[in-house]
Length: 141
Ligand code: HEC
Ligand code: HEC
Image (tube, rainbow, N blue to C red; front, side, top):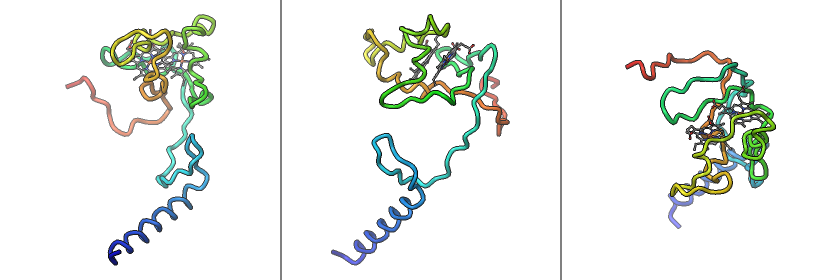
């Protein structure tokens, strides 16, 4: 084993250890400790925006016009589907997930939500009362 390689091993171990110390209380869905020690995201409350949002372009995922702090999405359950699924939207008086959410990647219609549409907030974003850091000039040029 070359000396350089041994040094690299120790270096890697040191980085891993310090990562574990920083993120001791963070766990992945499968229960592994997460070793990313970056700053946690600011947790600002999400807002209700009466009337919702216009979309900036065709096929933009509409932004979420209501708070979502109480709903979680994980391996076992999806809080959004309590109101937006085929089975629940009428009782909840909420818009049903779009037709496109039932198509698989080959455009074949499924009889349930397509797995690639399961993590709603991958595409649909809520809003907070934060001031914009830069002006949004999308579409003005
Ligand atoms: C308690 C019921 C309920 C839950 C749970 C819920 N929603 Fe909604 N959602 C609504 C209702 C009702 C509306 C209609 C707009 C309004 O007045 O708030 C709506 C509107 C939306 C819209 C806007 C649709 C459009 O065409 O503009 C999106 C996107 C959305 N919700 C996504 C989500 C996501 C993502 C989650 C989970 C994180 C979620 N919702 C959880 C009830 C719910
Ligand atoms: C891969 C991106 C993506 C994911 C994931 C996704 N959506 Fe969407 N969603 C869209 C886009 C794009 C549209 C608008 C265009 C369309 O009709 O497909 C949309 C439209 C909607 C609408 C408006 C429907 C209407 O008729 O106006 C609702 C409600 C909605 N999505 C809810 C959800 C919920 C709830 C989930 C999670 C179960 C989800 N979406 C997951 C991209 C996504």
